[in-house]
Length: 229
Image 1: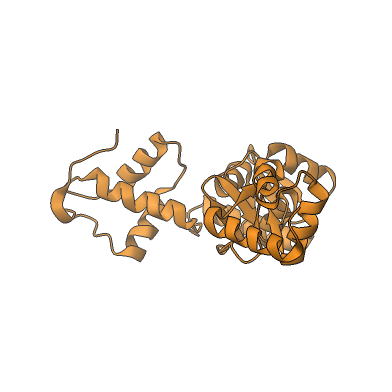
Image 2: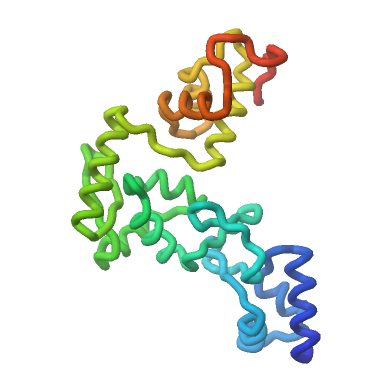
């Protein structure tokens, strides 16, 4: 095992290079096979554990650049300000203006969440409402839950357009360019995204067009007709 000063330097060098590391990487960097020693050294300089991959990955506390939902991804490894998957789901459900469906949460977190959601519901840590065959995960506070349900009903009625994560905004803009038709149609973009497994409404696509200045009804720049394969 390296001494304390050498350990701190080795960890910073490792994470500066790789950003995230598994336990085997840490064993090699610190020249030890003792998990307790590794965790002791990590704790001294501050670290976070991934909520994906069963918590198998680690990073230093100052490395993640969390988004507006408190999430940060390095390749397919996800970290959360809230820590564990369970804590992250609870935070998201409580803070979501319109609650979240199972599919929306999996889209945000890039991980299966069904079992963990069921545990949270069973423990009364979050609520679940049946909205016409769709389960909506909501706050346990009756006042907050009512607000979330009302907003969700407004969204489904087309009164309010639900906000989208930046990754989906990018997908919409990419498809608008790749469609390459004389007229850029929100319904065409939505259909192309649907074929790739993304659920987006026409209203949401139109909202992105408006926000980013995509001109509807005119030929797109360059008139590209390339498509993904």
